[in-house]
Length: 184
Image (cartoon, rainbow, N blue to C red; front, side, top):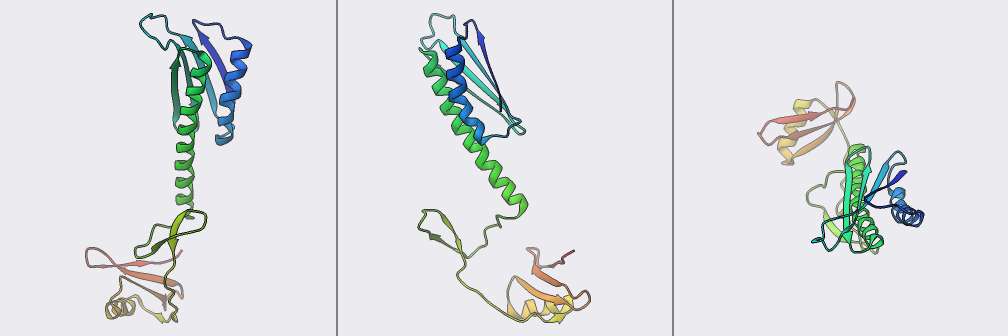
């Protein structure tokens, strides 16, 4: 991750620069190496502002721009505040990114109705398979499959299409009609 520390109305000493880079560079392990972070340190000149030592950090990622601002009476404490805020925001960004990518790739199936949630020893909750059903897949036409679907009273029916010899699924749509899923 590219890292840049700037000062406005303040001289950025080497110790201040190294403290900011040490504190904020830890966030780089959760971000893409092409990400850029800019840190701006400045002192508010208004005497009515008690927390006049301000640190602002901006992270430019492939997705959103992540920003945080921290102010206190000490510049080191302001950097700590910014680091904490950015840490929370980066974790939130990463969790959204991971869950979105996993869903796009298909590794996270949509939650099926009727599955019970079970507590696992690790403390995470997830759906568990409560029933397994096996049956022979017979070759038939889509019209025969629709008739079978009506006879068994389910919302979907898996069958082997007699024309293409592929496994297909016919399902009942909300509007009362049928839908057919065919693999490519």
